[in-house]
Structures are given as C-alpha cells and as structure tokens.
Image 1 (cartoon, rainbow, N blue to C red):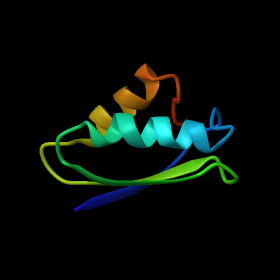
Image 2: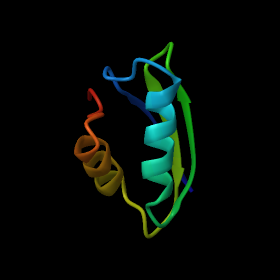
Image 3: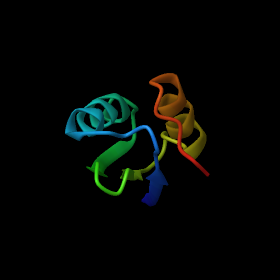
Image 4: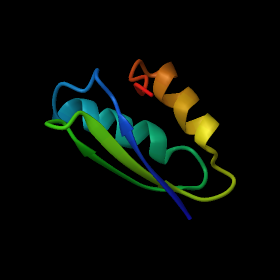
Length: 68
C-alpha cells in the first residue's frame, strides 16, 4: 500500500476536505483520504490500480492542485 501527504494551498475549510475525500475515494484502489484544513494537506492511501499520477490528475481536475 502506498501513502503520500499532499500539500494543497486551495483548501480553505472542512467542505474542501470533504470534496477532495469524495472525489478521490471514487478512484478504484484509493483506500483512505484524511484531510486537515488547518495544515492545507491531505494524506492519501492507495494500492493498484490507483496511481500517484491518477491521484494528482484528479486533484487538478477538481481545482485542488497539489503544490509539489
């Protein structure tokens, strides 16, 4: 299982975190998404068939691009 913390500057509240959680959990293989609006970050857990590129692409599609 893979795990990564993404820094996402566009997170402003708990609603943003819920939106990110809902969208990422729709990706097959994503097993968990935890967010912290105060730190403007989310931790994503996944396994195949999900990939880091797919997760990043989804974050960009929903207007929460990670700042890496």
